[in-house]
Image (cartoon, rainbow, N blue to C red):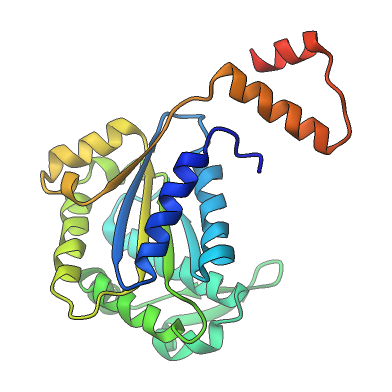
Length: 243
């Protein structure tokens, strides 16, 4: 309720999430300038997907990733650990097989350690393997909501642009499309860069635009936030904070 000014974006992403649970593979691009709150919004929508749509929500930060193989490894490792948090690990053991191992990092963390050959197969057949994974958790979840955040290095990669287009093409040939929605989060110029690298991508994404909040929306955020804590705000102080 403190996502002031973001209700249209919340409703739009929720619509595509809901659509995907009926057997659609949906693609979104969350486009916003730096400092506007893409990551916070994406994290909220992951929680929303789990709470309201009964999906498994997975948020992957890719700021340090520059290759598609790295991306795929990060994605599956993140899915693995989210499945553990959601008590779905036993359902996934057969899918991951011997590629998982546990290490102690302030509690148990599961790492995804495929061989070079297994990682190549996962990268080349990503959509098929994702569909298999979603089928594995189908008795417990209505689908998968996957956020690919901070695509800083990948946005300038021809490999990534063509790989993502190959996912779309692969899903289009499936008889039963997996209940998956993917939201890529990045800057508007990163989206445009991907479009330049792969001209088919503009037809793929539903664009979710996030603009800066107006002064009125910022003031409303502060008023409602402080009100929850039982604190009144002096008008002069409010003006400074809004500015």
